[in-house]
Length: 84
Image 1 (cartoon, rainbow, N blue to C red):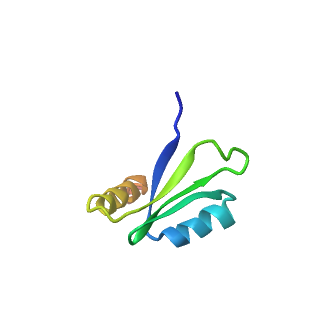
Image 2: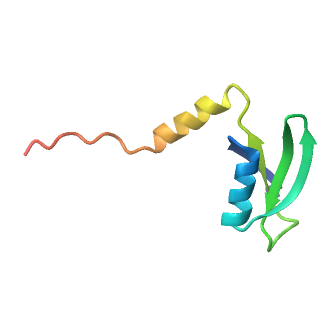
């Protein structure tokens, strides 16, 4: 058993594609137009038949609040003032 594909929610597919390919070194595998967006995946160049990252548009109503909550959860808690 293995992971074949997983979604990464993105604000802008073209910008995300540039980041994943030009900065991180992934390669585009699939780009199928689907209306306003695409089924857009990238893979590792060392394993082109391995797991794919789907650069999924964050257009669903629940995605943006979910992303915001993740950012908030990852932020360090406010520091309490020193009492010394």
